[in-house]
Image (cartoon, rainbow, N blue to C red):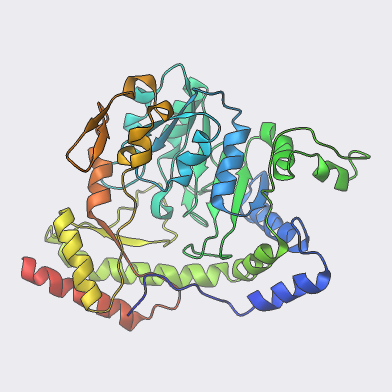
Length: 397
């Protein structure tokens, strides 16, 4: 079976973990954590970078930094992972879901402004598959309405919008180093701060609500409890693992891009024939080759394709389900704005929120399928996967 994902080890991970163990400094904010943070700040120009135990933790820090009041509204795409919105629900916000673009799963900026109310405080664009949302338009909307923007850049390391690194454009950005990402640490995440207003407090939240970071820099003569927070910083073992990946970032990226392009070129014939759709990379965006997906014409066709590939010993998978149709969101009106208070039965097994129709999101939830993409995937394996897909569609055409 060709797996969907296989974590890539550069060869230095265990050595650096051993170095961290020998140093006697295993808790957070040691040498490897600082090396990782310095790299992200210097290489990508983030004003502040803080390693976290996960992207979920980075999002939760961002939600706290937004200083929301219960009932405040946050606009986010429905086609995303639950962590994107769960962080804001935990601080009492109500979630307003926005539809995807017609030609890619990113949030549609054309539909954001109509969702803004006097209670709106934050927009959370998600850079799906590492491909940038239209950030100029999103930031323009945010600036005109005095809103904060938190970029969910979980999949977007080393990807750019008009030459600017993703995660550096909004007020904050959140990255993931989960084992399915381009560079990994098993788990692990990163919060980037691009607005100086939030830098000092971000360190306090990161250090369990204390001004410990200021103490270690010699800025105060003792530290104490000054704010809310949690143990968001990761152990040195996570950062040591990640440092080995960072050292090989260009090598990893180059190979992933080769695989992505091989898929894209080989499947063009099916796209030209209208049998499936390929990823769209807008002119303003770069491609970090986080993921290669195709969009089938129906849920039934996608199900058949996934099964056919499994029979060929290829593991392909679908992705997100529409969050606005989730059991949690449809059964808990307290997490929705008042105008979306009513829940109705779509059929015997499903519930829907009355007045909430996001057809593009639902289309991607039903029709998108992800193909294997990892560093050690060989050209011959890619060719075999493509040949299997061509065989499947030869019967369809």
